[in-house]
Image 1 (cartoon, rainbow, N blue to C red):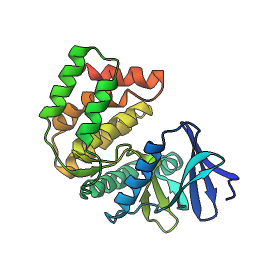
Image 2: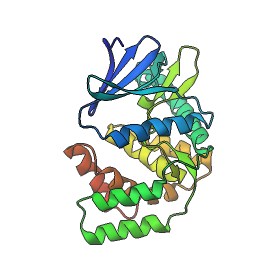
Image 3: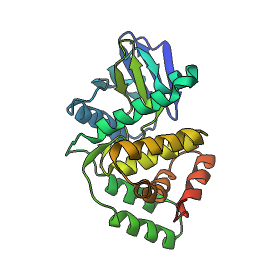
Length: 249
């Protein structure tokens, strides 16, 4: 493999292009189970018929685990939004349509969203009373079995040269409630400093999915708490500031 073209560097992994292949190399010490789970998620999502890069192999390169997938030539939706700010609303609409397509699928063997969130809430540094409240709230939310991406944002969507959109990075995919997935996307816009984008996104999602905004907002403290386990100090602080917010304007 010729790993000379770096496409992206993310937390504890580097992504390379090798001809028509994309090679995601994980840092040493990365959990083997997490890597195999990510490849398995992606394989399961392939079976739903969504447009995603296919997994070609899981291998080791210089003692580090790597997932090899198809390389999709194109630009991310995040790049396009930066290059064409006047088209941002159009891109947001495309993004929501894609997310609703994801939510229209089922994949019965994916991990369950509620199980994952319960586990993450237990791992937080929040006090026992807050954790109990969050677990109780999570249990009271309706159980669904829709495919949820778990990290759905403009940088995980690539528009190929022929205009076909592909969805990347299925490491966090689960089956569960679509509104929890939407709450996660809303918080990602906020984390990125795009508060206007967050509001427009939420309005569009609720309108197109015929979902009450209050219902998505009910998920936000739960999602924020479960996401606060990873990420840097600043992100954790921001997410934890949402946990105590019970009522929203």
